[in-house]
Length: 279
Image (cartoon, rainbow, N blue to C red; front, side, top):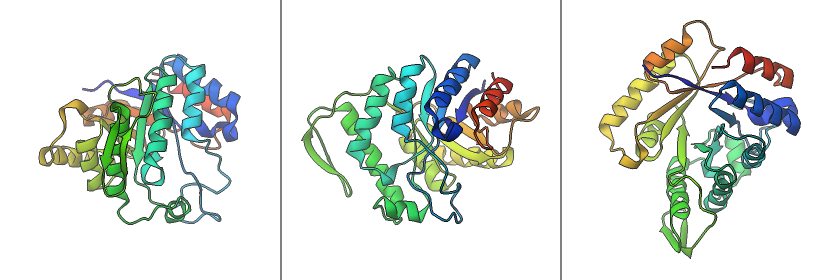
């Protein structure tokens, strides 16, 4: 049975993005034995809020790369996760540079969580069409890996083209740890073919059992590159932990629970949550 690691979600939202509160909570999570802290991300939110938007427009989400770089300076060992960057909304060469810099400054602690997005107003504001955003994300990731691993790099795809360019610093990780979110069969295939891990957000035990079964099915159907290793499964549960949950998620094959404090994200509440849920 898997020994479950614990992460903390929404590190960039604590006390409305207060930098001291963010730092204190990250340090508390590190000292308590959490293996990782994770940002949440929406570049913009619909105003007024309308489904399927997950948060009101006044919600503060400090930029992921800025937050993780800041935390690289105030923590020592805890991993720093993007949960998740909506990849089709980003210019891939610019994002590759930002994330390589985070990995460089943190000495190899980046966990690159990515997804394809679902909010049309946000996609439009970022100049990204909703159509074929999955194909765009797959190609962006491949282009970014080319820049991370190659000098005088060239890439020619449908959405990205560059020739004879070099980006430094390279990430400390020879193979930046990538985690893809999404509950569709296409997301499961993306996890098998392109990423080290898969991240299911707000998933009950029943949801997770279905996801794991579909991931195994995808693993039998699609080829997994050897450099990615065994698929790592991370879950943010739909509810706060209850007695028996850790064992139940572990029996399903979950490797990490990325816990969501929820509520108003006041620093005092988050610190109490960290203490109550420490490994």
